Length: 379
Image (cartoon, rainbow, N blue to C red):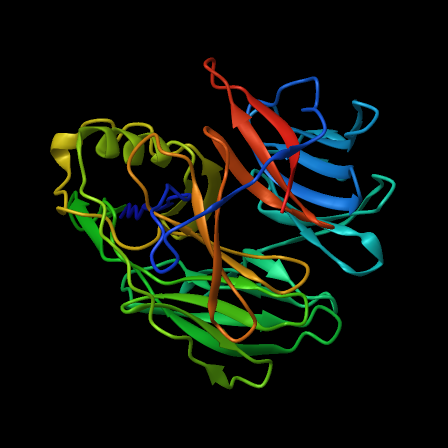
């Protein structure tokens, strides 16, 4: 008997925001010129030294060593399924020794990249067990090289919360360090007993927690209800931040279109079981068929922040991207190591935050043709 189970998860990247407590925002200004060649879609960025970057482009399927001052770049490795190749290069995570970990979505593996661009060892981030697939897709690392992720398990059932797990690559030790609230989703099931398909779709602007990793291993968690920033220490102790007042942003037609467009850049995970043969595939842009706003039920207003809203600087500040009206410049609430809201930051119009370096933030400006132009911004 043929049995098929397909589950699609879509994780939206950040949208935009208003600020709560402070009333005013500091506008970031560009430091130097933009890199002279555009990218189709920057999916990962890692500063190796001031102005010297490792950058991945998931659409053009390339990874480059880039020198902003000289305006030059050299491709690292090549696209493909083989050893020392990549397919769908995504996030770049800092490792000790100025090495980087490349998330290779298309090949379902994690690949080390040396500071000179040398492609190193790879290992799968998917493990197959009796209950389905276990997915260890890292969202960050600390200065000791320990990886942090939220496990995704293929198969039926879903909790309303998820663990944040720390994985020590040197010892193999796995620890649960925190829990976060997950967004509500919609499930659609079709087919009969022998050929069943289940599709998991996000609900527009569903409230959820977001988190990021500090270099010292602390976890910054933006709590959705009430909105605040908690810090979780290495031993699991929680320092709860002070709730932040904020003004909900009404959802208009432009916001609906922007949310749907954001789905085109979301992460899709497709798992299938056909007659006992399990398979899994990862990609971005897997939700492009969800283009009709009428198929969704829309709330009246946005929550305080979108999915994936938390970024932590090398100095240990937590930046939380806030929801704003469609087309407005992106804004961030900045919290200190005690969870206090200390200031607010606004990026220039049409600029998306990519990551941080020594005293700078790196951003990508989207032009009218949808291409992205990379530059550093003072912070």
